[in-house]
Length: 431
Image 1: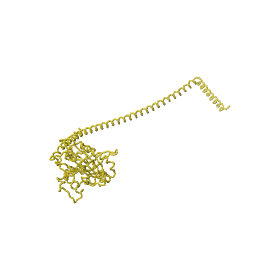
Image 2: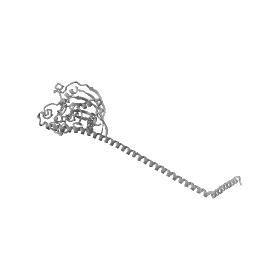
Image 3: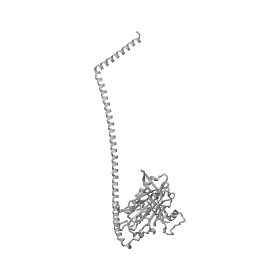
Image 4: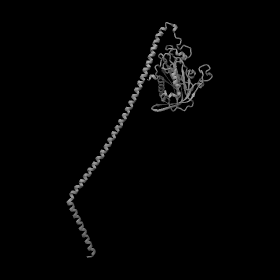
């Protein structure tokens, strides 16, 4: 045979022997340990399956725990919010209770004053019955509609008693409360009347156990008005007016009947003391924080304002409130034609006018009003004085601010301001 053929046979035999040896070895191995190895493989597979299930269980437990913690935190947050709300409600309730107690204390003190007045009136009525039998003791100071005399002086008023004043006069003006209504003890009353061009006229008043001078000094202490008036965010005196020593109510006090009445009022006002005042008031209107700014020309009228400074007469001669309100609804607002505060026309007054300056850039197109102070003879207990503080104002907000949105807040603040002034001059009532 050829060498190549021999080599091929040897190669095949060798490969065959090697394969046979391998098969025998595998057969021997599997015959001796095969069963144990399979069991081990199955056991490993089982362990891996158990491990996988354990990992799944752990992952599920972690997820469940996280969800539970989240729920607990949410519950705690909700409880905390409820607790904060409860605390706020408790605080509000405490404040309301304090305010109610303070109001009750003030009302009780004022009721005591009113009782003293009633006692004095009862005594005076008994005295009056006796005086009927003695005509020579009849008072000659009684103020009545029929009298032709002018306004009484403060000196004359000081010696008057309650029965010397007819508090039921039909001429009491303007008509924001009933003619037979006495405001003592001091709670504020208010009346609103419509006016043209997004405007309102508002009348308010309160009776105070104090002298006219007490209240006058508070209202003319311009640098410190923010200490008295709530919600006054800014109160800045820009200029002081020294004024002239002029008797503007006399014949030669500056009247010029050839001029329009508003021009006369303007000319006289420029001779009076006062100031230029910049104010910003803050309030919440329909849930929105709102601030209104205005620059005011303030003038002091220690003898009261002349009648021609007002757009209405001081006597209404029996015309009903409804008819007067309907008529004034058509009257346009005009500078230096002020609204008339409520007052007894025969008793003396002291006035302070406030008017937004021309071309004011504040929220009001026009703002002008009058503070009026008037004595109330016979309405205070012995040794005390009583007075009536009234305020009439015309407001005309800018076109972007409908007056219907702010009139309620303005009337509320006016009553609040009147009560604040009352409490400021009567601190013992709060005490």
